[in-house]
Image (tube, rainbow, N blue to C red):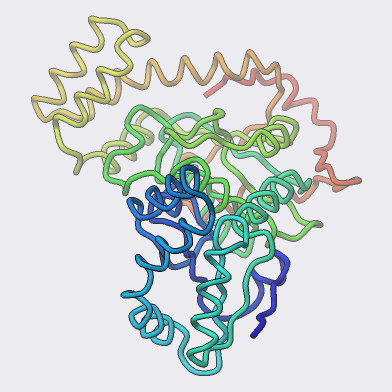
Length: 363
């Protein structure tokens, strides 16, 4: 009894649940977004089979694997049928598209399910991820100092039908020492790349993708070099707000955070903020005056932002969004880029003497 083995593109576009039969540890490192963890072996069983293969050979390892799998077979079938529902194929993959996925496919097909496997397994999917992220797209990078509500503006742009890649949303991190507060745990970099690739391949090739300016890492998640190279070459727009509005926004975001978590995040920037300022910010946090602490911290973050702009040597057009809600700010940005032209895969904004005369680090 045979089952179809599909390319990555065909496998991803087919309907039906994806069953990842690798071990839970492999799945945790990274998986096809939306796939169900459906391990043939748990972590210890996989390690035991691997050791047996090295020490006693393939036949002994297969026998040990059958001992582990045998008692689970009926449960595998019940779970797969519950996930598949009527008239949907089950998509199955392992690491290389070998014995684990083949065994599971055989079992489920024998039980009456329609089954396809991924040719080359998750390893082939990972090659597809790197190739996909390397594909060029027109891009507009959204810059701005801490507290200018860039993430909210990106969401407003998305609501207006624009293509948006929210790296901080995918990474579950806001990109600063405080970035993990009040957010779920971060994915591992491998899975972060997987999430990026699935969105990247869905974007049109003739319209710009909006993306927030980031350093090479968003928390513990590293941005793929192929994407970072495109970001550094892309045109950038900088949004500006008064310090007062930025403080208001940051207090609103972090006001529900645990006091000790805020203190720990502040201590992480002590070397750059300076001992006296750090001590003062910590005292304000412990005293419940988060706004005063934010005003001190912005001294460090604004200085770092200006330094990065000067290092890049870019002249960046600015859009003043003082007093604007995210939707109004998104409208102002779209109005700004209406005059931009798209030529041969690159967005170019027109010659603008005024923007050239403005210092790129102006608030």
